[in-house]
Length: 284
Image 1 (cartoon, rainbow, N blue to C red):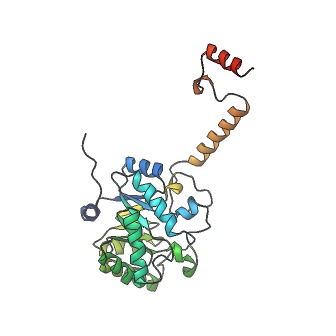
Image 2 (cartoon, rainbow, N blue to C red; image 1 turned 90 degrees about the vertical axis):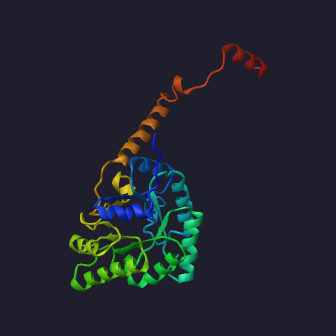
Image 3 (cartoon, rainbow, N blue to C red; image 1 turned 135 degrees about the horizontal axis):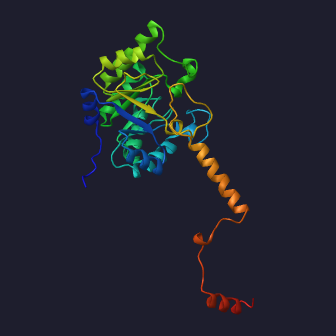
């Protein structure tokens, strides 16, 4: 049996150069990580989307460093092959470069992830450079940035006008120059994503960025039909796990109520003579 080899940053850069598409998905727990890693996913993002799909927040803004750290550790315990990216939550890198480097170090060192991700373009390039200079690989994220979506007018497609498109291109180039080894392109026109992908030497990972990106990322809960609040346009739902889970629980409730569970095969027993002695000892 051949040894499982961990996917490293040079492998991802080589995949772009060779035209091999990169698969990326979110995971937030040990069993989720085990599953997607075994499936052969290239990159696992421990995304701050966990705030919505795991913790029930209305958006990603309330997510804390402690929450990201705990979930990143859980994911790392379930991974053998995939490259794992830890997401830096809102206000963990926005105040100063020193704060950003400190928190990136916590997520990278204590969380055990292979790299960290943060949102923002040109304005965050100095922060990216500082973190990379400290020896921590950084994954960029531009276009629609959920942590600051309110400033962008909500969860809307970005880069549709000429000026807006130029800004997204400049954002991408700034992050690459700052040292980011890959960049998420979220909710931008596919033609714009194609131009950025062509201009960059580092991989682009699309989520609502079209087929021309070097790879794609989806939230696991969207992909398997577990998140019911809404389904973004860019999501393809591959399963309806929520309905399967719901029916399983309903069947369990019914079996309990109708005395069908536990059955004999789910039960431990004592020998009859031991039961008789016990009853005698207990005066029953």
